[in-house]
Amino acid sequence: MATSKIIIMQSKKYFLSVGEPWDFDSPDGQNIINGIIIKIVSANCIIFKANYILHFNGVSGNFFVLCPRHSENDFDDLKNGKDYVTINGNVLPEEYNENMSEDYLKENSKFVIIGSIRT
Image (cartoon, rainbow, N blue to C red; front, side, top):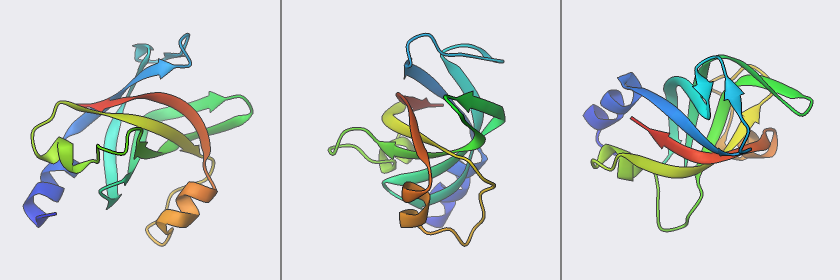
């Protein structure tokens, strides 16, 4: 990934459009989570910070570990002009820090949403 494209992706505002759970509601409205990309871990893992803490069946947080839902997609699609990428979203029930590896993030987060990340 070129450095300039990474900076542009991380400075843009994104939102998550939530498909599952189908009855999801947030302070931004039905099926929407607003926030920013704070870290591009890899083409298959990004850290998204919601503008608020969300609660899902006993786990809470505002940091999400996002992975493409379909193997033919990755987050390079966003930097290359695609409007969205379908995702599996896991909430990280602790503060995110730069020292967390991709494996740690995936193992210590809980799957909570299916949806898409959009500009």
